[in-house]
Each structure stands twice: as structure tokens, then as C-alpha cells.
Amino acid sequence: MKKKTINGALSYLQKVAKSKEEKAAIELLKKLTDSIEESKGDSRSDGFPLPDEAIEEGAYTLYSDGACRGNPGPGAWASMGQDLEGKIIFERSGVDTRTTNNQMELDGAINALSAVKAHFEEEGIIGFQKIYLYSDSKYVVDGIQKWVPGWKLRGWKKADKKTPENVERWMDLDNLVKDLNVKFFWVKGHSGHPQNERCDLLANQALDQAGF
Image (cartoon, rainbow, N blue to C red; front, side, top):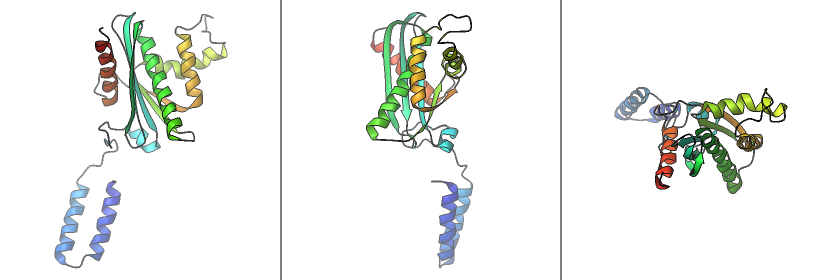
């Protein structure tokens, strides 16, 4: 509950309080409430704090990561998503026996968007819901925001007329972005970001379980 809401309720109670003791107790509660620093990024229901911008804008949040043991080598992707209240709506991961780190980062983002799209369909959620996707891969974030528009104008070719690496994955990601209202954010990996650390754990657990 917001501090402003609590203070409003206490002010009303103070007005209707009859005894000096009741008024004194309410005044003490108001002082205690004022001393509490309100956090925008509260943990909500599932223990993972929502980013401030997602709370302010009312956005679903997605997180993705990729891991590779050898580049190329066996790799895994992972993703998770939270609804507007912070409830985890999915956690997913997958393994590829021979891949690259960039491919797994792309697969993480692709699967995150596929999962939230399926969630909207299953729950009958309609409308152009805001979605924020957080990744520690500048390859993914810069690629979808800066490179893909130019590639598309050139018929999915780079400026040197060569086909971009992982072009089929980029096409899959672009198709999902066209269907959804998505904004991408880069976060620094292995820096204590809770959801990014969770995705990293899920990817590495998937590799461990697959015997890699």
C-alpha cells in the first residue's frame, strides 16, 4: 500500500478519534509511516522486485539469458516473465548440443516473447499490453533496436550485402516484436540483478542436467 494512502487513512482516523489516547496513538503511527522510505521496486508477490519503470508504466516484464560452454559448444537459454503485480507467469529453459552464445541469447529472448504471447492468449488478455524485456546481451538489444531496421530495408542484408549471422533467429524475433508492444533494456550481467541472475541459474542448471 502506498504511503500516501496510509497517511490519508490515518488522518481520517485522527479526525474521528474521540479520546486523547486514540489521537496520540494515531499520531505516532503517522510519524512511523513518515519515517519509512517507500520503495518503488517492491518485491510484490513472488520475491523478485519489479523495475521502477515497469511499475510506473504498467508493463509486463520479461527476462532472458543465454549460456554456452565453448563457443561454439553446448549451450542453453532461459527466460522468465512477471505480470503487472510481479507474479511469475512462466520460467523456461532449453538446451542445444552445439551452438553459440549469441544464438542462445537470441533464443532466450524469442522464447520469452513466445511465452508471454501464449500467456495473453490463454488468459484472454486483449489490447496492446506494454512489455519490457531485459537482457544482458548487447548483441540482442542493439541488434533488434539498431541493426534489424536497416537489414530489413536491404532485404535482410547488411551494408556489405552479406546475410547477417543468425538471420533466421533475427527474423523470428522481429516477427514477435511486430505482434507485441515491446521495449528492450540492457542490464549488466553478473551484477546482482535478481531476474537476470535467475535466468543465468536456469540456463546453467539446464546444461548441468543435460550432462554438459
